[in-house]
Amino acid sequence: MIEPSLTFHGIAASPGIAIGRAFVFKDETILVSKRQIPPERAGHETKRYLRAIEKTLRDLNAAEEKVLKTLGKQHARLIEAHRFILQDPMLTKDVPKIIESEQVNAEYALSEVLSKVNLAFETLSDDFFRERRHDLFDVGRRILRYLNPGRLAEDVKDEDIPASSVIIARNLLPSDTFRLKERKVLGFATEMGNKTSHVAILAQSLELAAVVGAAEVLRQVSTGDEVVVDGYEGAVYVRPTVAVIKHFTEKAAKLKKEQEDLLAITRGPAVTADGHGVTVSANLETIEELRLVKKYGGRGIGLFRTELALMEGSKSLLTDVSGQAEIYRHILEELAPEAVIIRLLDIGMDKLLEIGPEIGLSQTGLGVLGAVESSAAKKDVLLPMGLRGIRLLLRYPKLLKNQLRAILTASQAGNCRILLPMVSAIEEIREVRWLIEEIQQELKDQGVKFKENIPLGIMVEVPSVAIKAKVFLAEADFVSVGTNDLVQYSLACDRSNAELAYLYQEFHPSIIELLTNTTRAAHQMKRWVGICGELAANPLALPLLIGMGFDGLSLNPHEIPKIKKQLRSLRVAECRHLLEETLNLSSYEEVIELLKRHAPLPV
Image (tube, rainbow, N blue to C red; front, top):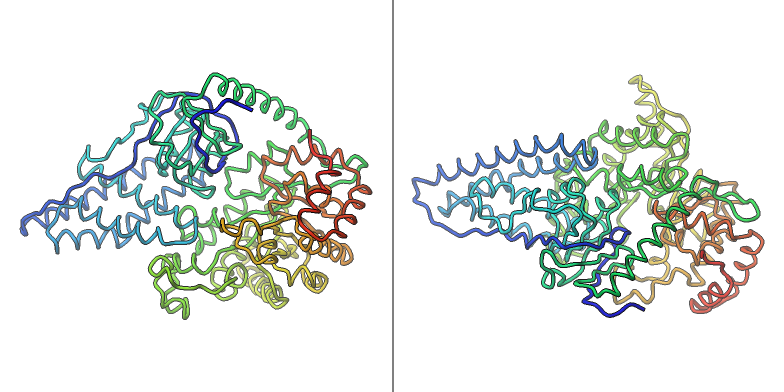
């Protein structure tokens, strides 16, 4: 137990421990004032504004090459996204309209537009899209710099950031994230953000200790204060005591030694004590994480979540087949001959309403729901439950065909598999197969080479599929269980809702039975079965998963070494016996008690 210290708790965004002097990014408030201009000067003010946009565009073009060299293509696509924002009518038309109709200065007109859009983003229920407002804000800040230099609060220059510092901020904008690697910061903590924010993803890629969502931390920290950021537990210690510093220095050294020992294990096979092999692969969201897959010993990709790669930068990638194919080809080449399981786009109707116009879907094309401009425009709109994943893609086949065509085009580069999200009906699998056959014929006619017979798998995320697994597996080549959604749909609890968190029980007896039924059905049908939800990385669950007979586990890359180590302490017969005991229990508490008594946990 360490001595008390001024402590703030947030979300553990990237593992690691950073001990150093704080460098505080002050609130990124844009300071502008309203100024009336004479009617005859309105045209001049509009030209001044448009010149600022041109200069901002030149900056973005210059930054792209630098970002490509330091952070790679995935983050360079953010520059392209900012270019699209600069061309958006809300900036090119709405701001000049306000300047001329209200006869106000350009800075004020721009801030009015940004404020309105920010309020719209705040109403979104989806974290991914709510966080994207910072892209718009970043572009707005760049424009303001040219409109009136010096009007930005605490505009931090690269040379201001000391090496080996720990960044403390309300939020880090996308442009801020590009400085972290060059300045050799140790880690950071922010008041805002979540695991899908730019800065969290970047921290994981750069292996920086990071905590986000640490409310009020900015009020208590000054530049130069000593701080500790614990990216494992999601805690920030401000002006820590000697005992706290000693504790975390020792913890960091111990974790470094453990990590070195674990990394040695990554070079060996993933096998149990009695020689039973299991495929331990990685979950992937960005291309930058590929090096982590290799570093931590992942055998290929068990789940490539394509949403971030296709939507984080320019949204045109959803309609850009060659751009998508380039991403898939790169990953397949890097990891060949290991398998790469590419999950088709798994977005909901709320996201589609937001991006529809960007990808060429008119409001009419979005059907009845298109009458609602966006989920941001009318937050009381109730969207249909479960309208996401393959259900949504089949409703809007343009998106589905683009992605399938891109995967097929890139397929010769390696060992490719396709995974369908949110399957609940046999017809969905059949329709996708028909589409694949149609696209294959089109590619043949065009002389484009591709791999034949790419395995087509389904995710088990709803109880109906787990219950009738044999029926579905007659149509699918393999199956991957997404426990995160399976738990929430089986137990009728929103896993993102704090009020229902107590009901989200991964070890509920009904979940154990559904998982067991799925693996047994898969083996009866001679199908490969994997698991890619958070349960796959839970040490308490591993003996059960081995007892059930999962062929593959897909985890966050950082989790792979510890699971490989634990595997070596397990014996299949003992795991099966433990599973049978568990299946006879009737409550979550009983299951947990049994597992804690018998499950050998890693030392």
